[in-house]
Image (cartoon, rainbow, N blue to C red; front, side, top):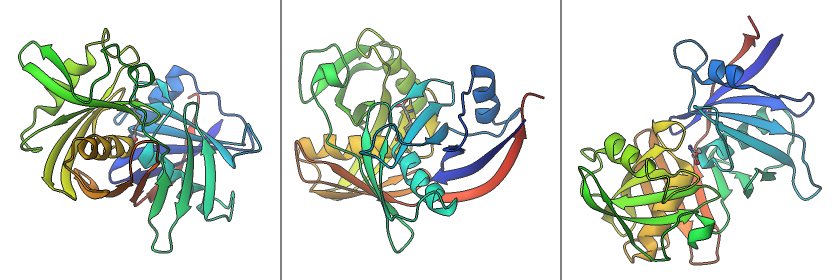
Length: 279
Ligand SMILES: N[C@@H](CCC[C@H](N)C(=O)O)C(=O)O
């Protein structure tokens, strides 16, 4: 069988996108590995699958698989890529789309300048919703071997995020500390994406994210939303911020608790291809 795919990225967070609107796509672990592996396969941080809508309230369903094959419920950069993919494949000519993942409903808006704005829904802070097992707080803390007391904000953007403020993103121990936080399965029963945010002023910051299931990526859209929200709740950001991630910049807008976070940024098609499978 030949499996058609499109390679895309949003600020360097890269995707293999599959159109499953006409025929079902039921990937097993081996096929996902082939799609995500950078040496023996195509290579990407996430595999995104577009499906026909499961409810009349949305235009498409959207499945997300991390590089390790785990299925998750949110991918902010991926949703911008999805909007461009749907338009370019002629699946819809609407400039506004509603999509449903297994844990989030998002509204995607294609802008005239080529950027995509995503209504990511309202952030959720209750520990059970993140989820994390600590009593509710604006700032949590963990004692981690080799790092001492590590403070972080926690939020669900449809997926779990911990956000750590750092004085300098470039020198932050993203992989080591990211792994150490993720190792606390007693605190994060569904795992966690770990963001490292350097606040520059009330509207600017730098961010690196050690993602659950994919390691450090060049950008994480839901991570950018989480970082903006955590910084704003701590009084460090105004309603709007521009975050520089390793692979590009995202614009965030959040008016406050109970309101949606809006994220704007680019989405780019790199190439299309066909994978012979199994071979
Ligand atoms: N890169 C994504 C997030 C992908 C899922 C994440 N690794 C998780 O496991 O929750 C984004 O842009 O949001």
